[in-house]
Length: 329
Image 1 (cartoon, one colour):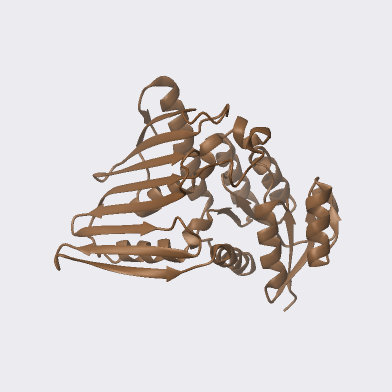
Image 2: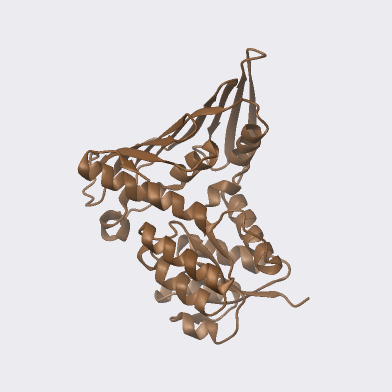
């Protein structure tokens, strides 16, 4: 079989990860990279020995089967539509769109073109979270009643130039929306109501929120609470799930280790596991899953509908914070 021909659109920090993965996978040919930034583009082109283009039309002219879209959030929708129109399968970084309307348009375009579009919710490929999800699916803690997610990190450390970046003006801490998606995924239901408070509380000088507290109600007697912040000095990431028969806790503030805990009410005891991980593991598994779907035409493990749900909750959170009222989805 001929190798699947892939391009990466946007080779900043995350895009470089995807390009490196594709360059190292058997049966995959990284055809080129696209970036308007010459420094990013030249580095990726040199490291992976592929051409660097400034416009996606140039890499499309070479003939590609699939692409990763890792451009700024404001361009996700436009770039994904352009690739779908060209018959290219797309892995698009989260969020799928800025607004639910953009997600709906992508869903219609995907159905019409028969293309594979997969939102890049990479944490759904994290080994610890996958293990926890398997416990929930197997009924280890019975019916899920409540999910609680918390993530906090001090944005000046990973992004020293954050005040000059779009994150400071546009989505702010909502860029950490992976944990909203995890809450929906673990609850296993579509959200029906959202209440939230967001704003700039941490003195970081951001126009966009640096804190959000979101409550999500699900139809079958379940709720979730998600805390996101950009000012916590000690990096913090933890998800807790409370069920009728026990509790599951996943903690992975560090990229190289994940702590899993399961409490069984029947046994009246905790069990604990520690999993050694690397940050690139989930990206590799995500990229591999996307390409397998692109080759087979199978339904992707993360769908446009999944991406749209997370965006809808983010939009509802913003609206609830502005109005002081609950938002019905």
